Length: 226
Image 1: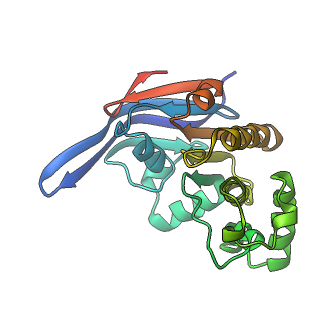
Image 2: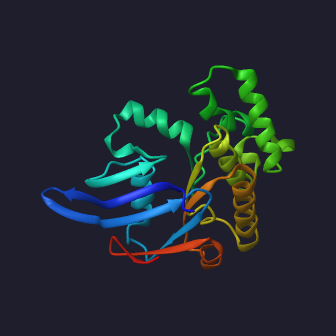
């Protein structure tokens, strides 16, 4: 039986350059079931990252509906949306966006501390998750003391500290070599099993795209194949 966790209905996103409209997303319908890994592929400029940002609530819709856990996030106020994202969605990007002056464990703790001021609990949770991504022994290292793959593992740990149901990943292996890319993919797949995650993944990596449960191809702002 299908159990949709993400429902996108007739989604449009238009940007404006002065008075000139640029339609980036043009009527997308997509349903993702709980526990699925869905890869989003397509040529550069086809709207993949915009789609991920809009569905993840990082950018607004022009029109259409987005339901996550049966809640209309496109109708939420910015405060309500921020609260909702923090508890339900984890984000992983091509550029890890770790804070350079913070240690690995401090970076992982941050999302938890934005809504719970229990530093001891945050530290305990962060350490447990660092163990899951095999970096507990690097907890006190700063980003510049870590490899690119290790930094991305820290970013993934940070994304799951609040136990979200969904991970949005935008080119998470884009800056990594083939071996490290494979390790990051394995980590994401293993975390899916361990935490019952749903993962929506934008990637140019054909191997990763093919190993997802579904591959969705975007072309000129529309779904070409699903």
